Image (cartoon, rainbow, N blue to C red; front, side):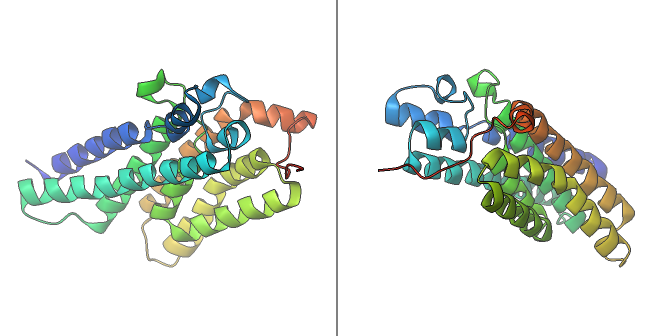
Length: 233
């Protein structure tokens, strides 16, 4: 079997595994454990951390965050095991770093798709913010820091999670392009194809997250989106 065929097989398996792992929705699982209810029938109807926080409580929301983050970490790490296993078993060589990085990107993006459109829950999942954050953290730590800084600053300013989320999602591809093109490609540490691939994946993930937040964007434009406020005792 050729090197290209092994690579294609590895990437396809990474995407499938990433999607299936991403489809494990902790908001749904934990809400059923805590309340024996479906989180999608409560609050905003979204199967994500913010709705769990508002509808169920702080501890389930924290556990939802941890679970959704770690499942995408698992998807990315599993892609590396798949590629290493195939290359060593079929070619008796280790995969190149670029191949491993591409697998991380695709598996991470697939986990976001799985979170948003989970096979196990009738394709009704969350909005992908936490899963996307995990993917970004494991594909480019520089972009991750920029995205987290953006989220934190916007949230501290307005106290609205959806505003911080859509701003971060919109700027995510911009940060990727700036780092991948101006710092990597122009400094000759990466190829142009690397920069284009990274930007393309980030456009897909960022665009998907924005699409899932379209109702939030409408409420933000109308001034109807509610901020997170401390409950009065």
